[in-house]
Structures are given as structure tokens and as C-alpha cells.
Amino acid sequence: MRVTVKSFFVVCILAAVAVFAGAVRAQDEAAQDAAAVENQPLDEGHPQHQRALKKIRTGSMLRANEPFEEAPDLRGDFEKRRDQQVNLHYTRIAQLDVIAELAIASNNTTLLARVDEVRRRERERFRLAMEKLRIILRATGLKGLEQ
Image: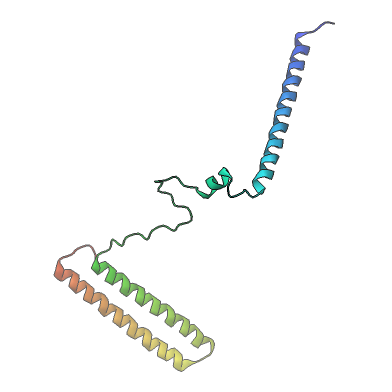
């Protein structure tokens, strides 16, 4: 029997494919076995059960199932007061907007007129509060905090 170089390469390629297919099949079987083992609950005395409960290293900055600590508030006193006034103002305006929409939907003109009056008073209150904060800022000499 005469073996040519071409037929030798074909046989080598077929053998490599067979070996590769066997390795892939073995990996698939190992993965299926591992999946079957993972789905079974571990006994509490099992070492891997103890390891699974402790998912972070000692001294690690990562915290499992714990919320992040609240960031420290780095704003100054005047910034906090300003932000409090702004939040209060926009909350009140949003509430008045909802009441006005309900008044329009029910054709209640007296309620709508009352909402407009309260909205005007709130704008004036907010303007005066911001002006008071600006005066205090100018008197203390702080710069860069004006809105």
C-alpha cells in the first residue's frame, strides 16, 4: 500500500478533528455534571457551603448586601439654607400645579383663582427668602455662592 503525502495529511486532520470532538464532548459532560451538583443544596458542614457564605475578603472595601454609607454633606450653611428654600419652593409649586389641573378638570373657577393667589404669594415668599440669603452672603463676604 502506497501512502502519499496528501493522504497522510488528510488522515492527520481527521485524527485531530476526532480528538477535538472528544475533548469538546468531555467538557460538555463535565459542565452538565457541575450544573447538576450546583443545583443540589450543600450541607451546612460542607466546606464549600461555608465558603459560599463568605463572599468578601477580610479588609476588602467591597460590602456584600450592604448599602453604601451616606456621603457626607460638604455644603456650607448658606448652601444648605439655599437648597432647602429651593426644594421647598419647587415642591409647593408642583403641588399647586396638581391642584390647578384638578380645578380645571372640574371647572372650579373659585379654586383656580385661589390657587393663582397662593402661587403668587409663594413666588413672593421665595423671592424674599432668596434676597435675604443674598444680603447675608454679601455681609459675610462669601463669594461664588450667589445663584
